[in-house]
Length: 65
Image (tube, rainbow, N blue to C red; front, side, top):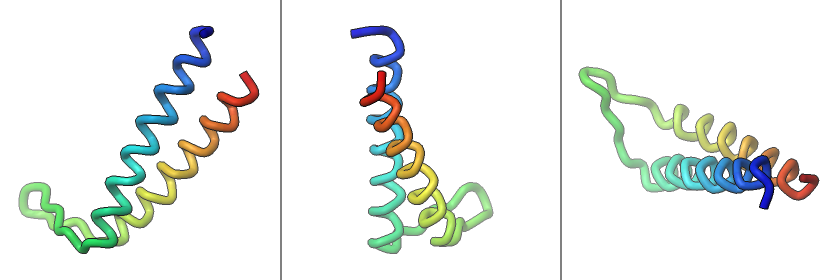
C-alpha cells in the first residue's frame, strides 16, 4: 500500500467516524456544552454534512490512487 493510499484510508475512517458522531448527536438531541456555551443542534447538522462530504471526497480520491 502506498503512503498516499494509507493516508487516504485513515482520512476516510476519521472523517466518517466524526460524521457519524455528529449525526447521532443531532438525531438523539444530545446537548453539548463548552464552558458557558451550549452548542445548538445546527452545529452538528453542519458538522455532519461537512465531515460526510470530506469522507466521500477522500473515498473518491482513495479509489483513484
